[in-house]
Length: 192
Image (cartoon, rainbow, N blue to C red):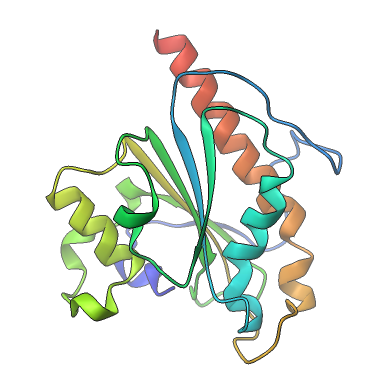
């Protein structure tokens, strides 16, 4: 969740939709493209906005219909290496991100934006997402591309519901994830 301490640059949106290319409620992304894509949602459903990643992958599971895309509910385990196939081409991580902007702000940054060398070492019992990405890089097991899509939480307290500020941004984040999938499929087709 504390990604922005290790971020070189961050793209964010406080209210203006990042993409309006996808419209409608029951979108289907279809295709038999070659790139392997994993969409990993991380969060704790019992802590309101902290569960945003899991809420989103549950929704995406009913929307995305592509044999090259795997939707993964990572729950509270940020040990990415144990959750995703090491041969994937693109990893899209969805999580709550405390970046200091107003609640509901949507962030998008890639592995190129992260300074994984500045990640503080932690115990193996307390591994975080950034530490897991760093470990994957050190072991040469990182995907060709990693994108983190986050949303600034308002409430991280016991409860099952998302705050209104976060919940109203769900459609925008879904569109952003679908755009990432489409662009990856298109880029791989062009490079063949």
